[in-house]
Image 1 (tube, rainbow, N blue to C red):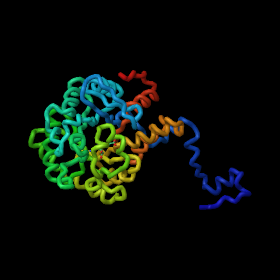
Image 2 (cartoon, rainbow, N blue to C red):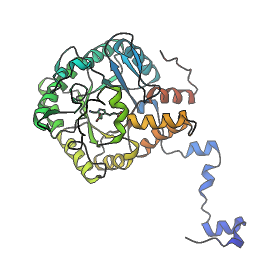
Image 3 (spheres, rainbow, N blue to C red):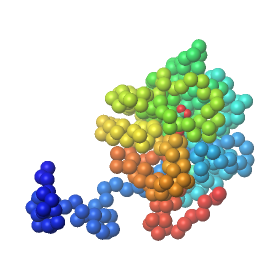
Image 4 (cartoon, rainbow, N blue to C red):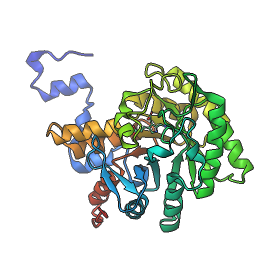
Length: 354
Ligand code: PBG
C-alpha cells in the first residue's frame, strides 16, 4: 500500500493519484445509492420462529433469562401462530416444556400420541394450515436427565436412541409436522429417520438436520425455558461438536447430506458464521442458522442496560446470517424482526395477540 505523505494529505488530487481514482465512499454517499448497492437483505420469509410451549390453557409464562419470550399453552400458541402467519413468517419450530412427572430415563413420552408436540402440531395445522411446522425429535425435553439420548451406565447410547427417534419422527409426521429436525447429533440418525418416514408413507416430509451442533455455553436460557437446567447431569460433549473444530463440522454435515438431509442447520449462530459459509459453499443445500437462546439473551440484556441499541443489533445480527450464506434463521426475534421489516416497508402495523 502507498503511504500518504502528511504534506499531501489534505489535497484531493493527490488522494486520487494515490488511490488510483478508486473511492469506496462514492457508493456510500446517499441513502439511495446505499440501497442500490446493498448485497444482502433480510425478509420476513427468512425468519423461522422458535417458541416454547407448556401444558394447560391460557398460560403465558415469561422466561426469566429471555425478556419478551414466553412459554405458551397450545391455545395461546395458536393465536401467536396466526399472528406469525399474518406477518409472513413461513414456519414455526416448537420446543416443549414437558411436565416433570412425564419424564423418564428413556424419554418414552416422546412416543405418546397425546404429548405436547403432537397436540401443538395438530392444533396449528387445524387453525393455521398455511404455516410450516418444524419439529425437533431430540429426547432432552422428555428425559429425566436432560440428555438428548438414552442414558445408560454413564453413556448416551447411540443406536438405541436412533431407533427411538426414528419412531418419534414418524409420529410427529403423522401429527402433521412438515419438516423433522433432529438436534440430538447421534450418528446415523438422518438416514434412519428418512427410512422410517418413507416406509410409513411420509415421503414428502423433509429433514432439516441440525448438522453442526456445537457443545456450546449459549444454550443456557433454553434449558431454563424447557426445564432441563437443573436435571442435566454432566455435559453433551460426547455427542455435540467441539467448538474448536470446523473441518470436523463439515465432515459431520457431509454424512447428513449423504443420508438424505434436505436442509442443513448450524447451531449456535453468530459465533459460527464461518461454519454457515463453509456448509453453503460445500453442499449448496438450503442452509439455516439457529440464533440460540444465549445469543438472544445477550442482546436483550445489553439493550436493557442501555449499552446497545437492541433493535438495531437484532437486525444487524440477523442480516449477518444472510451475508454468511444462510437461507434463513431460526430465531426468538422472529416476530419482533418481522414486525420491524413490515414497518420498514410501510405496511400497516399488526397488533400482536399479547
Ligand atoms: C437439545 C436442544 C438444545 C437447544 C434446542 N434443542 C440444546 C441443548 O439443550 O443442549 C438449544 C436452543 C437454544 O439455546 O435456543 N436438543
